Length: 192
Image (cartoon, rainbow, N blue to C red; front, side, top):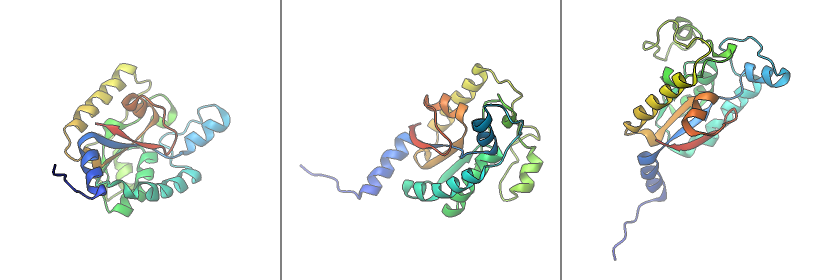
C-alpha cells in the first residue's frame, strides 16, 4: 500500500480550504462596555472599541497568526474595522468591506457612520460598494437578517479561498450564521 506524505500544515490548509471559514466577533466596543455596566442602551451610534477591546484586537494577531488567513471580510461598522486592523496590518492584507455581514439593526450602536466618514478614517480601504447610508433602519426583522445570512452562506460556498478567509462580524449575524453565541473577540472555524 502506497501512502501520500504531506507536511501537516499543508494537509490542514487543504482541509480548511475545502470546508471552513474563520468567523470572529468584533472585540469589546464602548457600547458593549457601557451596556454591560448599566443594562441600558447608552445611545452610541457606531461606537469604537473600548480600551479593553483594542488590547484584545492586538492579542488576536498572535492567536490567529498560524491560521493561514489570506483574506479578511469585514463589516463596515467601526468596531469591526478596528478589530480587523491589527491583524490585517500584521498579515499585509487589505480588508474587504462587506456590508452583508453587518449587525442586525436593534440598538443605537447599529446605526453606522456614513461611507464618506468611513473613507476619511480608513482612506486605504475601498468603500465604493457602500451607499452613503448603508446600514439597516431598526428594527431589522428576523426574516431580513436570516435572508442576509443565507445570501452570505451562498456567497462563501462559491469562494475558493473560503478556508483561508476571516469574517469579522457581529453577535446577531454570527448567531444566525453558526447558531452559537460568540463573546466579544471569540473566533472559530465554521463550515462554508
